[in-house]
Image (spheres, one colour):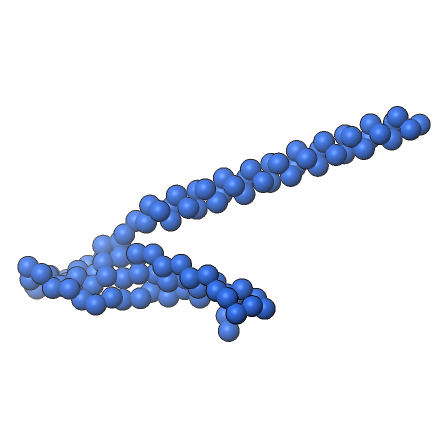
Length: 103
């Protein structure tokens, strides 16, 4: 069993006005080690368009929700990192002041 899996899933074709549209989605599975649990993330990826007399082409879908989620995660990580560094700096300063007061 792999820790991380990612696959492209193709949906059912839909025909209208002489075009056939096939939706595609990306599914990501992250398994938790030692537990029977997994995080499954599904998001739209693209739409494959087939037209008669024309080559089929792919229309990518930008997932703004995923982009916003990543931005919030990065901001949170940077905030926690900055808070940890500032807290460490204060502890070191406080410890040095305490050692100076003892002498």
